[in-house]
Image (cartoon, rainbow, N blue to C red):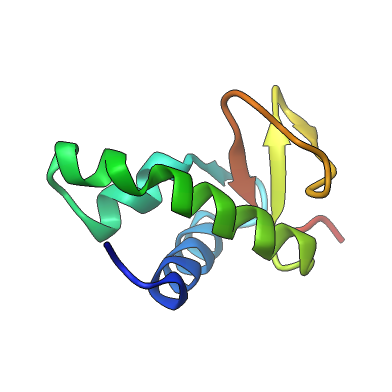
Length: 86
């Protein structure tokens, strides 16, 4: 499993590459770090946790069903990651 710093860096790089109007799925981060499906799936919980940590720090936003979520709330289901809105 990649270390948390590598996960955080990859999230930030992919969000930045997407631009201000695009979002990414946590699975895209997992696949970038580990292309084999059985391996990348195991990393999703850690990737999701680090995404919420980045959102709490204000570095990214978390969306669910198109709406920005409070990263301090417990959010279940499909999420998307994007750049903070200015």
